[in-house]
Image (cartoon, rainbow, N blue to C red; front, side, top):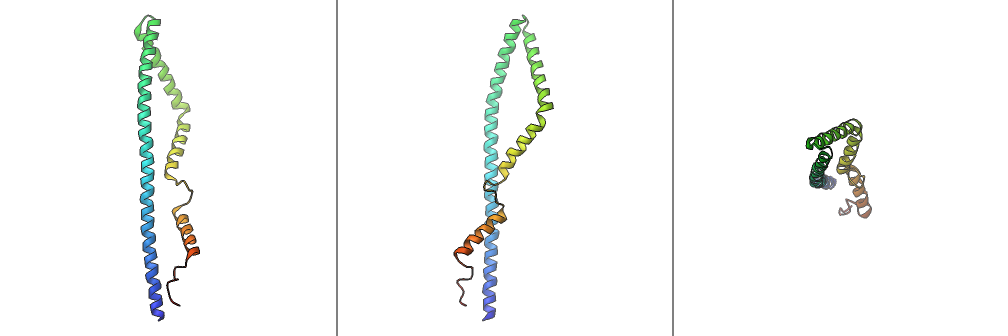
Amino acid sequence: MPLESITKKLELNATKTQEYINNTAEYYKLRLFKSSMQFTTRLVNFLVLGSVGLFVLFFLSIGIALWMGSFFEERYTGYFILAGFYTLVFILLLIFARKPLERVLIRKFSDLVVDDDGFTPKERVENKEIKESQTHTPYEDEAV
């Protein structure tokens, strides 16, 4: 009789361990899917909006360069002035915006990886086990 009880408990532990492993694997699959989809969505949004913004900037720059060229009576002068302006903006961004931009990017991408609820997988499993133990005991099917 005691040997049967130990055998049942070992089988139950093996079953629970297998369920835990399967649930953990499923959790990480879903988490990876969620993170990859959020990343893909944000990347597509960035590429679409960025490409439209670049087209606007490109045509606006050509218009400004042509207007400045007609103002200075030489077409190439407007292009050189605009190229100098963009070079100055590039250098200023390179010097002053590099670190803040890195911080913003790291913060945004870490938000994609970190879960919204703030629990680690271990804490989530422990909370689930606590809730389950409050509703029924794992050995309630056994006869004493």
